[in-house]
Image 1 (tube, rainbow, N blue to C red):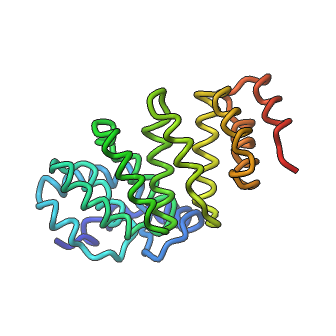
Image 2 (image 1 turned 180 degrees about the horizontal axis):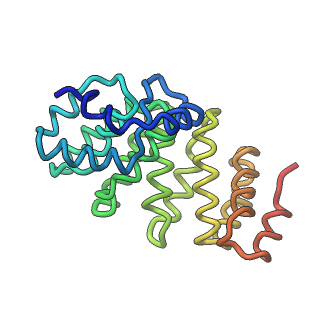
Length: 227
């Protein structure tokens, strides 16, 4: 298959410039929006074996995204999927590929308990985008009554100087503030010395900026800011 020939008609030059501004990646960005890539991937899976798609060269940002969509959607066993996920994580070099991949992994909802153990296993690797993957998976699939405490504890275990890892932690905590305000305030106060200042204050900023948090609660957040 000539993947560039397939992708070329969908290239949007303005979107390409936008993507280049916000995504720092080693891959060549063509400029194709994600909904279009989803449709292209669906067509590819109709006409090609999924393994042929996963074996495409990794030159283009959009091909990496397509591979992520394929892994998320292909009907294979849970263990086989974990192997593909692990291989894919080594391709991730920016926040967008990471977060789009996580958003497509709806299968996590069916394997929450087992996948949580897999996320803990990934943290044994000291790799920034493994860490962001874990944090964003928690954000998407584990901020609920059953797993909120697991989410807090895993966040505390993650240490990094990487901006995109720390921003993901702040994003996660801000979503916890929206869903479990009192519990999350207690978590932040009880672990003040374990949460670095940037993450702590950025979590508060995101909460203060949220339309889903009341003015009264925002006043509490403002008073918590660390100098």
